[in-house]
Amino acid sequence: DVKVTQSSRYLVKRTGEKVFLECVQDMDHENMFWYRQDPGLGLRLIYFSYDVKMKEKGDIPEGYSVSREKKERFSLILESASTNQTSMYLCASSLGGQGLHNEQFFGPGTRLTVL
Amino acid sequence: ILNVEQSPQSLHVQEGDSTNFTCSFPSSNFYALHWYRWETAKSPEALFVMTLNGDEKKKGRISATLNTKEGYSYLYIKGSQPEDSATYLCAFNDFGNEKLTFGTGTRLTIIP
Image (cartoon, rainbow over all chains, first blue to last red; front, side, top):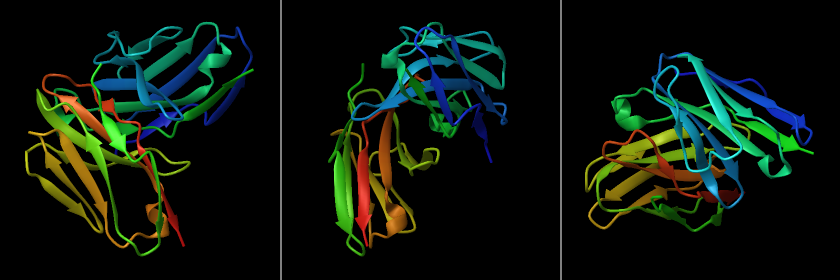
């Protein structure tokens, strides 16, 4: 079974802090994704990566950056957290090369609160 | 940005009743349509991946149909049980793109 883990289930940070959210997958997937989920808005893609050191902006990249130094790990960085970044953050991975018709496997989510 | 819509936004169903909800998506450049179930405090899990017009998939009491020409998919749950309470997400995948575009979900609550 694919396992996607995220470093924290709940996180509370203060405005202006630098925040790191970590995601690790153990199935050698090529693609990794970061989403945020807000009530009434569904899952919105922040950034994704299709290879080590490669990244592409999603629909809402402003205020975020990412890092993928190793294939299994994809980090989301909030350079200076703001209250409007309070949300549920989900990491996902997929095989790549349109394998499994791009089915994505999700982590448990991190609920971030910025005070 | 692709438009994927789900309706209704939320639904309360009596235990034992059957129900269905809809996902609509762009009908051009279709590659795959995904259904996920997201239970509270758990990760979203894939239910179905559908690729062909007219596809019908079934897993226990849950089934889904696909119409790529008109751009919609239905998810059906027969004889709802409390464990069916979850948010059901559909996601559209266009050809050549490894990203998914998600709908806003249908939040289903089963009333015992």
